[in-house]
Length: 124
Image 1 (cartoon, rainbow, N blue to C red):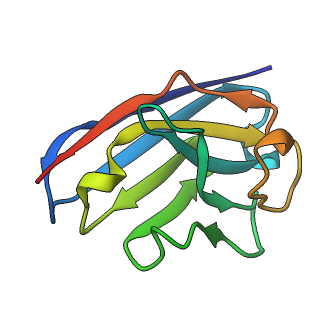
Image 2: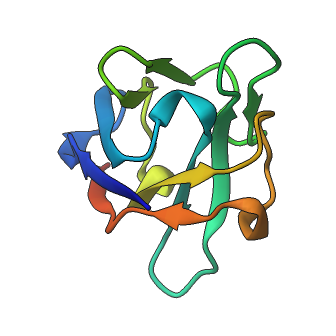
């Protein structure tokens, strides 16, 4: 089992920045690919970014490319999502997820563990 706890959400003005963190506990964190997803009110949950367990490609949704950066610190069992140039349409609950796959994946059904989410609200 892996437990995931997100933090760092909040209210920010458009154009601002936030850094989300996801702390993992339980089974060996470094063996998991990690991802961030988000769900806006009245919408389906959608992929945001993913990172492999070590080497390999990271992936981003087109809507966040160039603005968001996913990274991980395996020594701290933590994955981050740096969000810059935030827009009102980035407002959502952001979820951290862990996949038993070693490579990053954009597919929600390939993630095995999920956090409870953290709210990000971007005001115009």
